[in-house]
Length: 121
Ligand SMILES: [Mg+2]
Image (cartoon, rainbow, N blue to C red; front, side, top):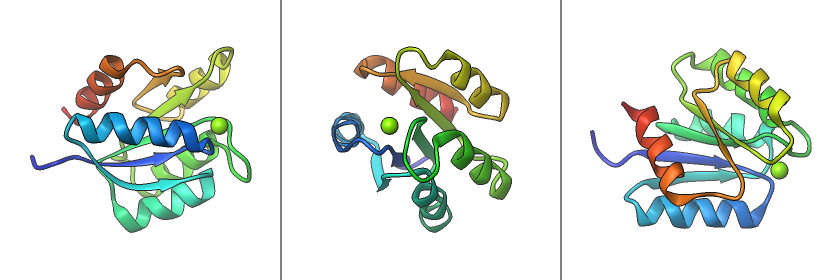
């Protein structure tokens, strides 16, 4: 396949920047950035990314609800949740609802890239 397009959904500007830098360094294309779940859901339909990284805690609409809406529209969507320490229950719920996998902040570049590559295969 060609260059994989990733949509980054996170309310933290710093997290978005870190992820963007890691992805671009490793040959991924960032197709868009959204700062809340609602924007992420809408942007998913517009940019049709190969992968989504989805923060859990965000204003307006959280990552769990956004994940559910995206999967309702596209059951093949590959969504990787981004969790902080102490969010085990939410992470389990996200996996139950169809998230492909999860990543924990602070980001470990090797783990981030490996998880995204696994999701593409
Ligand atoms: Mg957040």
